[in-house]
Length: 91
Image 1 (cartoon, rainbow, N blue to C red):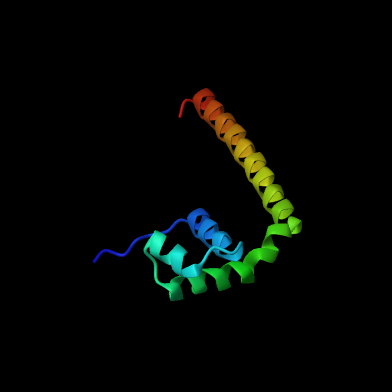
Image 2 (image 1 turned 120 degrees about the vertical axis):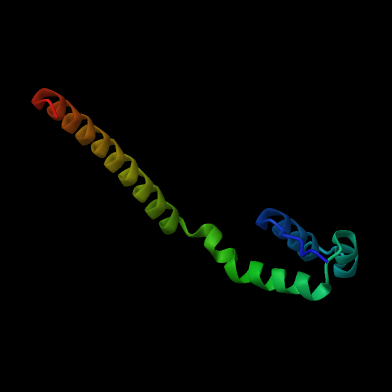
């Protein structure tokens, strides 16, 4: 039997349904998953939920993305200038 892949959003929705009071047995039957799988997802969800409020990581990521864009732009300008120089020198 082929193993199903679950995207993170769907896993979170299933876990949240259970945390809101829906019977775990009902959830597992509805989504055709093992209860042990649900509890594994729930534990993982609860362990990582504090990351939701970690704004320092988000700010660092945004800063890196801006720096990456700046460097790509700079590299493009330098490549263009090098091409112009080669054309002037007849290379």
